[in-house]
Length: 106
Length: 124
Image (cartoon, rainbow over all chains, first blue to last red; front, side):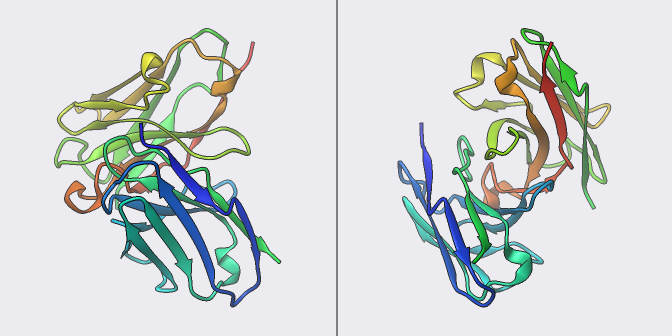
């Protein structure tokens, strides 16, 4: 079974900072990787699909990259509404989630 | 706009079967090649994919839950359902239903549409 890991598990950042989150798959998954944002008490929101495609309506400060086993989510300039938990997901076969990365205020 | 709504008991006794239904509105559950999934989140923890059903009826389950999970679809009611047997306190979670984008671009995951989630507590 493919396992998903994320690093860091949490990051403290300030408004305007550039934030990078890494996701690693235990086996190659081509570009079948999605990123989600989740705020407390809310359902997750899809940000990125196919590793680097921005979901409709998502601000362009979010970007994704990578293929194979190593992937990155970047927030170019952190905004107040971006403080949340971020999950990666293998988007094919068994779409398992990574453990999450919490982005909180520094 | 597609909308999904979970429904079912909020309290289930240990060893019993958890049953939830997801009602889909704003689109037909059988009209196109999408995956309809169930995801859960224990309090204070991360997301866990439970399984999904393709519009054709094919099912896919998380290997860690496979022996206890059944997902089915009722096209006449535009609903799909989750049954999880032999529950324990570890199955206490918010349960979400969701649908992906066009698999050609989004794969079988990449859930665009989500229900609001329903908390199921396993307790005697």
